[in-house]
Length: 119
Image (cartoon, rainbow, N blue to C red; front, side, top):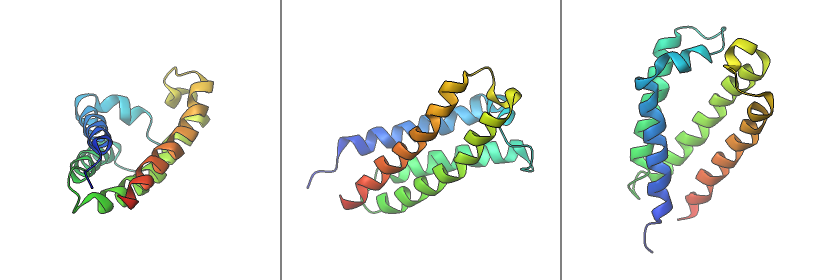
């Protein structure tokens, strides 16, 4: 079976998203829940995780590990999405309807990753 091209798309998406954590860290620090310590460190670690997991998707030998890591990461990121809904400052001017739509988007991204466990 040929390795699906969309796994490369998904991997690239996470690599780009993770890279943005290093280019615009203040944007991510602003949306970090106040109860979490070390916002800057967490922003950089989450960016590294996205980049690392994105590259792991490129290899059939590490794909499943990457998928489990991505699903776990997206579950943790739900904390940020709910925090953005509860705080006007953290919402960063994003309309409430868009913040609400991000919740099911997270679940879609989890399903998209999970779907590739069978390949």
